[in-house]
Image (cartoon, rainbow, N blue to C red; front, side):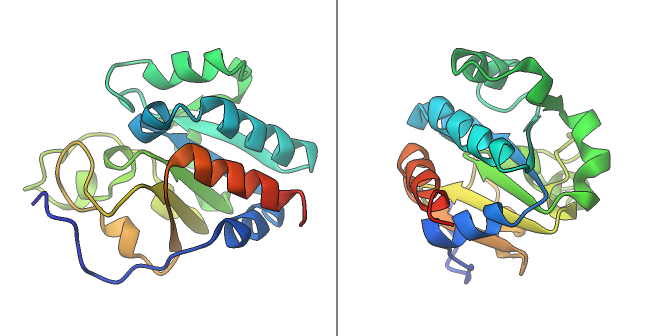
Length: 183
């Protein structure tokens, strides 16, 4: 269904997210179409740089079809001068997910949706995903509760380990970056 859910979710503020990230040992950022729409690649790059400067092992989990074309996230992040060594393909990032403290999903929905594994009726069933659900915590940056491109709900949004930071990705990331400087 393409309807936004009215199920309860845990929301977070930029301050909450900053504290969570500041105390993480390993963070994986999963960029998607929402990052592109918000033109937030420079801001996410600054956030990862600040985290790395604080000793956090922060990298990007890159799904091959995140965005609207193959390689879309690689191109966007290259524009923000993100080092290629920080871009970890899905197959390589997944084994480390159980030891990842926080996954930050920036405008990516379908590429972390567990329905790809669990729901044979889902249009994305069988598609490889980034195993965000295996991490300790998940933070979704979303403009709304509307589903992703595939038009299906993502159960991960309702997990007790997930918090949602609503708003434009660039504005949200800027607020988190600002709050991080005070943690």
